Length: 399
Length: 53
Image (cartoon, rainbow over all chains, first blue to last red; front, side):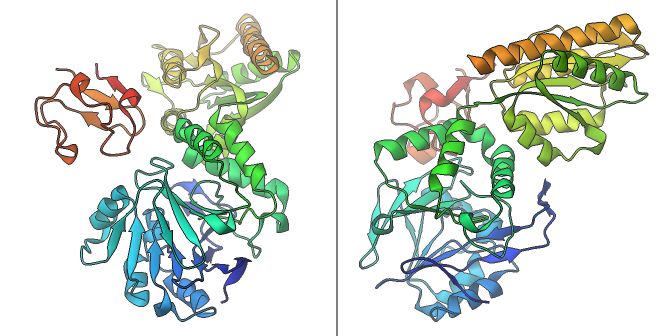
């Protein structure tokens, strides 16, 4: 296995995990990559490592360019085990003179590996290290997406080694954005944002501002997953600008589940209402929908309509499970409403509305509860609910 | 004295404990923290904190 040259003196030396399908609950239908980069100069630098189990692949790729023990510096941009799992083995193999990382990364990596004897050197935003002809400039990016996270900008190469930001779980034999299917790439980048970066949108927004103020020219972005953005880094930056500002499309998602089809009948009536307003709609029944795929739709859609029957005074577990996951990802800027059937107590709509309030959605309808089975009257109310949400979505998206 | 929660990472500042990592002695109310103080977990600034109910 060989290294891939990505720029003058810069090589991709990571690993491809073709067959991972569940990445701590994130469905990785297209596999993923753990990217590491090698910069040749008077001092040779390795950026990040790989997941435990892939260290052989990393060292083999490095060895196709130079002997691994010639590496002088190791930069740890992010300590999560998919990038630092191989940390100890790699340090033992390359014996670096210095390991650059943030204070939080040092504390975090010590909590993982307990190796205080390693030559750590803490860095902060703006710190620079000369490797010879080239300069590494560090930018702390706390909570994008862990406390330890930072990025490294190679000044002379106008290249940003961005750790998880701008990444995608996407295994391909190509390493570059211009060599892969563009729809697949954007789908995977959106899914990555929605499931990993979304909660830290305010931080992303601030970072993008800082990058503008620092007048950093970015000709290439090298993330820790997926492909290198060499042709079109502006594309992913503009998408991050959009997503972090919570700009959505005029679409309505109806997220629901059902026991005896009453709530499902209501869902289809709500859908009719949305369609009557000429707004795009998507039905997502949670018993058959992948959560992480669904989050991409949540990211894109302005309208979120939630439906659940009441089960034992609560929501259906498929619904509460997904909503708990979604709430943690902190979507914002949504318009919503709820509906659901019940047999005797009927708490579901109140609980669904609480979830909507927690994500600061604009709730535009009090919700519709129905005992047992909806009749024509209730179904026309559901159509109305769909219309009310769709109208507000259209209004906000055309503003 | 009120506890304050970091909106970014969820860390709770407890005035009774202070923040030894930034030499803030126990008994320092949130309002008296210097403006340069940041969340010890994620680095968020004081304005990213909300009072705990």
